[in-house]
Length: 73
Image (cartoon, rainbow, N blue to C red; front, side, top):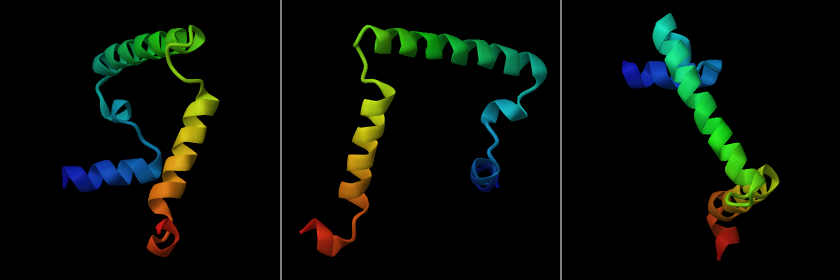
């Protein structure tokens, strides 16, 4: 039932933090904000690819991996 609820939450646009008690949600939000700041800092220093580069890589992967089998040959 947890798996089904988890997947339904995805479809409804809910995050795990939406189901946390207030105090736990605040702590989780702080941790996520810190992680985001670190990520953006690394992006700005060129240590991680830009959002556009990440998007382009994901688009290529989807095209390669999700194409019909006949197209992959």
